[in-house]
Length: 253
Image 1 (cartoon, rainbow, N blue to C red):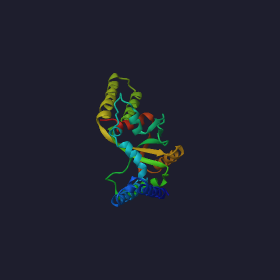
Image 2 (image 1 turned 45 degrees about the vertical axis):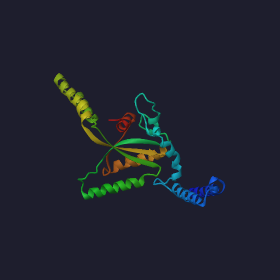
Image 3 (image 1 turned 120 degrees about the vertical axis):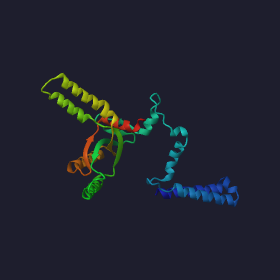
Image 4 (image 1 turned 90 degrees about the horizontal axis):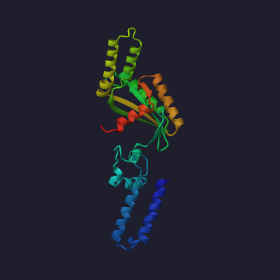
């Protein structure tokens, strides 16, 4: 219907241009050239893009993007943050990690650990592909899944927790043992947790509303509980961890 209305309006506009505007007083060569150009432009802008949007709806965005000032976002600490805010598109992040975007959608970030590897056997590979296919079939069309892979310093909070348990469980309260534990904590914090980088993968679930997000969360939780073929571990991130994840993407190195 949109295409038909667009073509009808374009033909009416072409009729007016060739009969009532200054073009009507030109020679037949220029009139024919105008008609060919007009029809070609109508066919181009009246078509659909790969994202199933009519191309003429992108013209305002193109005109806004054309000036160089619209293609540059200054992100210095003392600069106006509105430019970066418009690119980021996030309105707020709650304490539990619930993200609200400017377009009204909501989402959640999960730290995930998969099980796929180039070394898996063929049977395991088929099982993984089957679980992935089954998982995506359950996802509703009102939900968008985005996988984000980053390279960050290794997470050492489990090792730090283990060091704290060792400290609490010491039967002999010896200063030298405390010194060894302090040295271990310093190595984990200042060396392993800052120097050694590893690959981290995140899953961002973005839903049209809270109900759609809850359904997607239930499907993800059920997948993790039922099988480790697709996802071995999954941790929902709170606000602080979500900020750390976004900082990895948007902070210059």
